[in-house]
Image: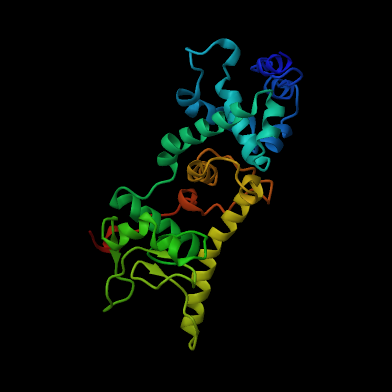
Length: 309
């Protein structure tokens, strides 16, 4: 009888919110009781930029009317929780304690917000040129900032040729499915297509330029210096990214299939379409000539281009 009594005992019912766990810190921040610096320190952005981001994401992360009110989390709180999670080494327990929710809720919210940014904001701000004019404009801005002609970007910052060989952009360039803009750089020479700037670990390809392995002339030295100077920007950018979002510096606790989605979400904040970066903080501010954040320059005349594909 005693044994059956012990086996039949029920466990205490789990509460939707543990006693003592509170989101008072977030409420004080949201209601303006804390200084503006707390936004940048805890969420890595100002209040104005946060509100712009919430406005864009609200249709995708807003409250679900079918859920009871006690379990509903506002769009503002979801975004703030996700930013805080990405900034503070990706600790689910820490985010749960700071925002007064369960650990399982943190996991669901981070996944939903990252998925929204990946699916809806990612293609808007991080994409390949879709038209010849966009490709031409990108090449013009790149040369204006880095003095390297016909380049429109980098394969990435990973020193591994396998990563680029398996990348979608490599397939598009190899199969000729990416828009091309040709230009004659010197008289009586072949037309040069648009290309990427890679590091010495990559294979030299018609659309991927890298340094000379050894230099014997002054022209080769100048070429290497220009290419290295233009490519170092991507190294600097990812260095700022890791310094700002500490989750990139530790082991991920999320499911493996969610990791690429999470990385895409973080990479979204690398650009400046919403002026997220604090230009006064040298540890956060990337170079202004990154991606679509190039400074304004004059556009070349169309006669300089020999044709398009």
